[in-house]
Length: 623
Image (cartoon, rainbow, N blue to C red; front, top):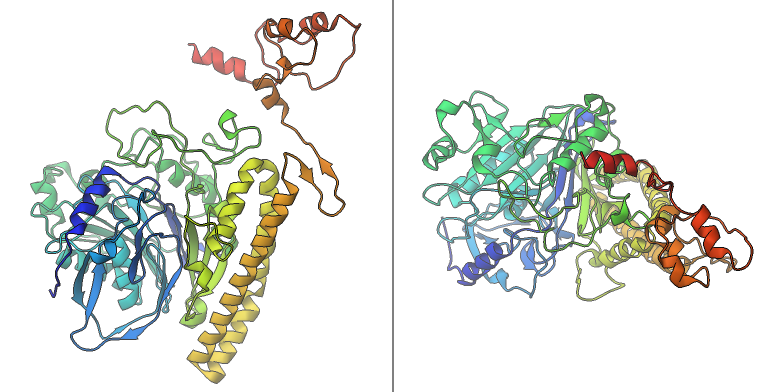
């Protein structure tokens, strides 16, 4: 191995990582070609985090970016920099800018590297090789060591995109790099797919001597969908299964660490190297359940499990109906609506169904220890306000690589973004997609266009989310509707003028569409400010305004009925069990308080007519 001197700053950075454990993390999936409506393979990823990270060839102070890395030829003896990733132990927003770019080791470079799109992790290369990602809780999270451990999932995915064209090749390369150069940081799940075959590779530290690392990989059966959400998903490791690969030191390291013994039967990867879920029960498994429940309702998966090592949700499932591109977008636009975890209902959602929660000291993406009971917890949804970007990458075996592969990319929470297509054949991305700075509100940044709308929508989510969905669908349907014509033209150019001309056309289309969409979204954001300001709903065309107020249940729960509606305001405060009636009535002047006492109190049973079922729940709770 060829190395150069490693700066000592990495040691300090690792200490910070261990003090500030991961806070956000991600959701990811694979839709195999046999599970899709048209034979496409899909990989999805929500990058739920902010702050410094390896982004392409350097460390950036903000990971919420889309970067294009061009193909390149390299002379004999060239070296490939492998940079320490400050995102390898924490997704917490950086308290200060980092000089982690100085922390770098080197490995031999190959003769030629492929072009690819990347962000905080690799996305898709010019040969339709696709990646997703999520962070996982591991028993051991080793530090960067220039002599023992220099690989983390971000660089592993980038290197695989640079050097391989198939999912199997990518998995084997990543495994060999971990074996040779060592692994540091959090546990990681990397779904990887080409247009024909899909795999999942998971990795962790924990070797007794601190060199190398531990990894396993499993092939996703064609016709099925795989989902992961911050907990390892591969379980039993069968050495005789041709669809499972693993590091040669796995069994010996597990025994040496006291994590597993052959007398226990097959090695359970999740139980062996991981403590399970982060933060609180259902932090991960509820998301796995939600996506499986939506794509395969006939399986009748229960939302409830016994513990973090539950086997109730299989590695992959066959969908009841094959998924379209639009269906894959919808998978990420989920707040558990209509389920036991629904974030759009209840007092915490406020009067207008806001699914997003301000995080407090007990909501960190920290390690969950056995027997730990926190004072409370919010369900962790797929679409979250702390999502920097998300994407669905699509690969199609029947089309040439520059045309067949594309990344549908969007900034901010999936529910409030627009997915914009960037073809695998592009040779650049718009500048506003790679200049994100969360410290400065910037109209020249695509990130801020979508992030602003997501935040503004929390003023009245019920109303604004409808406007957002309409605008979102209008743009995405137009993109999907123009896909055939766009690709037909690209194929014609490819046939007559060659690869470079086709790539130029696809780059032009992707750039123009992205620029138009971002501009349209800024105009849309302006219209939302006009329409939903001053706690009114204003029609910009005729200038009229409405005051919709609050829903009845909210008025009742916030004691609107105890407001100054009679002159005997002091007496009104002493009337117990008043309910909001949603009507104006008249009585004899001077008799107002008596009328209220006689007609507007809850029934003697203590009922709450505007909160159905609450009485039964309270009775049940008291048992």
